[in-house]
Amino acid sequence: MTEFFVNPDFLLETAHKLLRILAILVGAAVVLKISHTLIGRFFIPPQGVKTFYLEEKRARTLYALTANILRYIIYFIAVIMLLQECSIDTTSLIAGAGVIGLALGVGAQSLIKDFISGFFIILEDQYSVGDYIVSDNMAGTVEEIGFRSTKLRDANGVLHFIPNGAITRISNYTRGHMQAVVNIPVAYEADLNQVVALLEEACAAVGAAMPEVVSGPKVVGIVEFRSTDMLLRLVAETVPLKQGAVETAIRHKVATLFQSAGIVMPPALLIKS
Image (cartoon, rainbow, N blue to C red; front, side, top):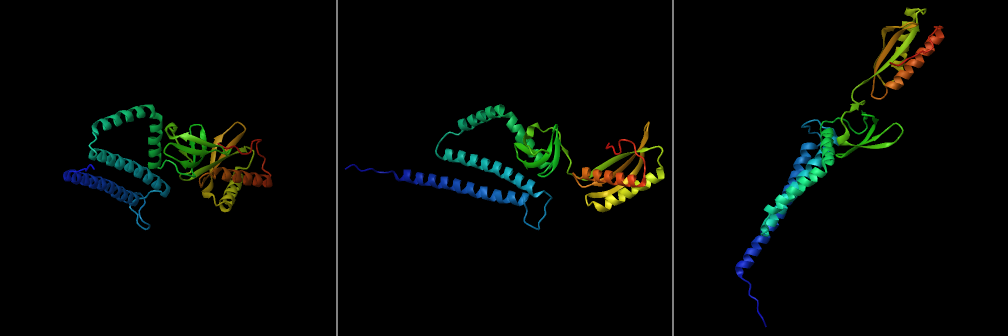
């Protein structure tokens, strides 16, 4: 019967190596847990604690992005340390990873551009879910914002996927108050004082009846003299995306009052500027 003798030094070195490997794994898990907790407290502080203002949905997106990046960094460092413990030369591995990363970066420039653009869109809060935006020839309501693309649903109900890297200019119609503008042509033969009084009555009625109106409406006055009539303008501040409804209500009220007063109007009663 053959007997195998194991060198005690070999056993001791193996035990030390296993302990170091275990320490690396445990250390990586602890660092990962602590870093996630710290990042979470930074982007999403406990209720009642305000370190800085950040919209909740955007904060959670930034938290997920930062946590993922940090997790991959910790994984990479831990793998390198484990390979070194196994006496594997990591120099060539790191160099090879750099070459592969460079090749992938060159071949995926558009994808990287989408991710970088998406990061800054969220970081700068250019628009949020539910906002009505116009980007080049696309217009609609934002349904979802990702790091690679933005989902935009237009007025016909079609859902568009727009790569973030292709978004070069954004017009956001949901930030701040909007302005409703109604231009009213009035014949020169009409009594101007009566017309202005009726317009002010229409403004008061619409302003009192519509909660969408933030300020006004009010009569600006005559803004243009034309060959057959003069143009009077009414303006109002409205909540976002409700300026069209306010303009329609103003036109209807003015038309009703003018008809009741017997004021003769030009063929095109109300023209929007």
